[in-house]
Amino acid sequence: MKARAPAGGRKAVDYEWAFYNAPVGQAIGRHRMVVDCNAVFEEMFMVSRKAMIGQSFQSLYPTEADFAKTGERITPTLTSAGRYSDQRVMRRANGDLFWVQVSGYVRNREDPFEETLWAFTDLSRGGRVESPQHIAMTPRERDIAALLMERRSGKEIGKALGISPRTVDVYKTRLLRKYGVTSSEELVSKLL
Image (cartoon, rainbow, N blue to C red; front, top):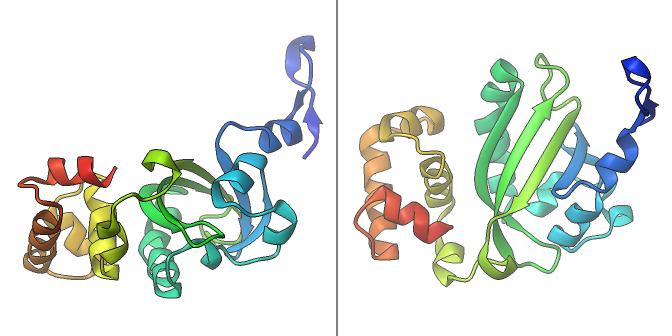
């Protein structure tokens, strides 16, 4: 990254400095491997930049299956829109799980994972998932919870996950019971 001199005689912007010192976690990826990351990313995931470079983003997910399913789920949106955003549970280097807002941008929509820029914001209270119920969620419940947090309907969730809206309702009902709430809005509030 180099400083770029803007038109009009203004001072050049140092994009490398901006990346490393951004107030949100950022990582650059190539084919789902970390190429670089900034200081907030290091703090958030409790991992050094040196240790993370060259590693798969998979190490930041609760399970390998979560990593694979997330890749499958977001590829169509990255291909069509060139960007994607959601909220999901991720894993720190010490094993703690926590809620994260993730936003990604692609350089090439035809090969969306060729080169990506990801921004991460920690949404969890106190820096980690406090409720043991977060950890007790099944992978399917986590998928549905993430899409509910995007304010998607049962029909939209079903389409995104390749399941029927009725199946979505069954899982949503389980989540409502598990968290002792009666509406999707209350559930989303509890998850955050």
